[in-house]
Each structure stands twice: as C-alpha cells, then as structure tokens.
Image (cartoon, rainbow, N blue to C red):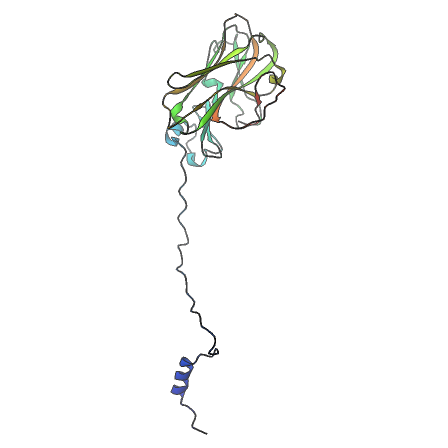
Length: 259
C-alpha cells in the first residue's frame, strides 16, 4: 500500500474533484441585482385644468386627493368631480343660476336640500307663483375635458300644489360660438312628482378644447300663465352616458339616483 497523501495533497484533490458525480452539471447561481425597495410610482394623471378649477374650492385641504369624491366650489354653488374615466364633471346648483324674481319670496322660496346625499344643505329654488319663468345657468367651458361629448340636464322636482304647466317649457343650450339647441318639454307629468329627475337640455363636443361659456336655460313667458310647484336643484354637466329611459313616460326624463 502506498503512503497516505499529505494534508495539502488531499485539500488540492478535493478542490479539483467535487463530491458530485462527474456526469452532473453544476449550474452557477446568478444573483439578480436587487432593485430599490421603493420603486418609482407611475405618474398620476392630473385632471384637466385642475389648478384653475380648484381656485374656487371652498376647502383647500388635500385637493389632489378629492376629485373622485367631489369638491365644493364657490360657497357650495357648484360641485366638481371626475368620473371613472378621469373626465371632469360638474353640478351647478340653483343658487348659481340667474332666476327672474328669485329674490322676492312672493315668487320664489329658497329651502335647504333635506336628504342623505353629499349635497345635503344645498339650497333649492321653490317656485311659488310666476307668469314669467326664466332660469339661466352658465359654466366656464375651459373647465371641461377636451375630446369628450358632454350632456347637460336640469335637476328638478314637481311638488303639490302645482298649476300652470299645461303649456310646455322651453329648454335651450348655447355653446361658445353661439350654436344653440332648443326643444320643449312638458312638466305636466305625474312621473315628475315628488322625486328628483333630469330634464336633458342638450349635448355638445369639446373637441380640442372650448373657450367661453356653456349656457343652459329653461323659460316660458309667452302666454302669461301663472305657474307653481317647480323645484330646481341645479344642472349637471357630464360626459354622455347610456341610460334606460321609461318608454311609458310622457316626457323624456331620468330619475336622479345620485349626483
């Protein structure tokens, strides 16, 4: 028997001859580069013209976190929010409207909205008695998202006692440049009583962006007919959406479930 290998020779053989069998392939382990613990967050899309819009905000705290839930503007006369697509939407409340004789309690009363919505406490205009119905609302068109088709609808309710509605009222939408849409709608309909409904005024496209004002109005003063029972909450301006309409209704209205 030959002499046992020295310690140095044994260590050299162990390094050259791994303990694994010769037909196995040793795969080196590559350690990937560890990425930073805090990955860069994807940039958030800022709603169109947010800075200009929020100059009217009633509460300036966390404005960039609140467009989805809604931001109150101009002493609760308007409300701004963005929809699920990130497009700007607005409600213009009745206090922001120009309503003929609305400062005289003989003709109009103002009452706080008493419901469980986020708009509780908003004042609504209650018609007492007029023969000259004239309601006008406006919104800065530059606040609206470009490349979107918008719709405008009045938010109203009819309450007893009511009279003078056998003559239809006129609804008008005027876009920057003077292009207008007009149609008539009957408010003498049981579907309008004791619930908030939308009266569609018209639609328009913003294209690459609009400058000027969107104007929307409701009026009837040609027959000298005295009227009572109309309650006006405001008007909503938002991207066109598909809705189911009651085909049995005498007028084209939509019930308001949330605004």
